[in-house]
Length: 164
Image (cartoon, rainbow, N blue to C red; front, side, top):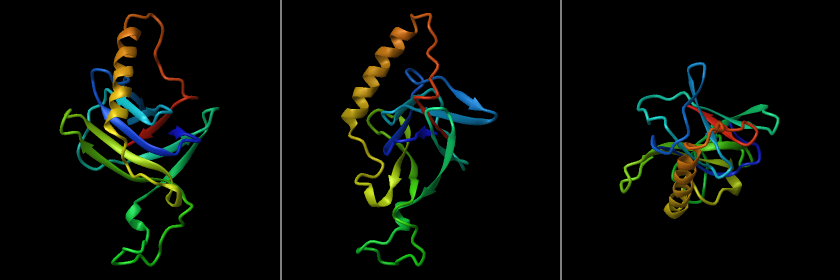
């Protein structure tokens, strides 16, 4: 689930030290994506085939499943082998989920882009300084919340999830 008005790049960064606690629905992992689009999670990256589902979530918690497309499904001026059946460019979808590793930090992450093909300017990329800034904030908040008796469970009205 992704906040219903969110459009842009999402990173799910696997980091046991500062990541959010693991959440499951039955046997499926749930990734609660914050409005920043960057989630640090305590889950470990797994290899193999992933059965992923992506949802928009409304403020009252209702889910709407999003389709998954690949940016290579679309024809451009430079396309060598044009697709006969190009998807509509105004389809709201999750584009090109992929797993990567940051060679500097050795952190694994999953990234994808949410939006309509015709409006997307950047595919699956955030500047490293944006992620570093969010990592520092998360590290500080996880240290202070570990000393606080209050619950740190995410509010489903302000987060979204991605189920692989």
